[in-house]
Length: 183
Image (cartoon, rainbow, N blue to C red; front, side, top):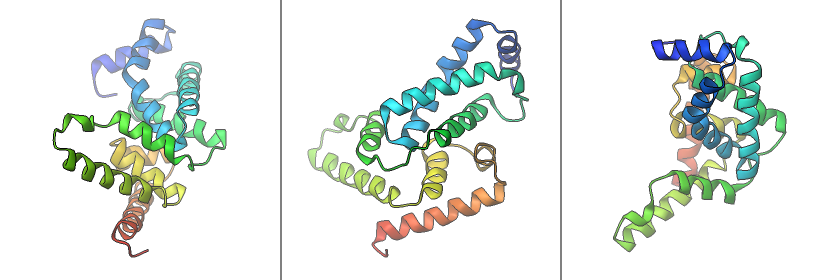
């Protein structure tokens, strides 16, 4: 725990104070939802997994040791919930629609040609990402979409930082090959 307010929030969570839990949900809900939406490609499943994540966190707050940020701990729970759900990452249409909602509004750009090119590039990137295997896709989403550090990714994935860096490097090489047409 880095900040005093985070430590106080954790104390309040452990005491079972509803306001602290509501504040935690407000702070982390969007990030957790976006993460599981990327993994599952299904908005309905993402909502369910996000809710299950917070229920599980509430029930197991005494097990949170504070070695990683609360957000990282919640992402780890969300990832485990996703794995438990047994869902695959083959729901491309729902994922692309979800990503467009989270991104900047493309209609804000006034040049229709620019919008067309930008939309095509985004679509090509997301289609290429879906050609990656699930482990490669996961590290790309965690690092480049969710903004996680390698250390936090290692905590979420229960792997060493070196392994996570290597997997990310391999995923980028394959993604680059897909985008340049070498595969």
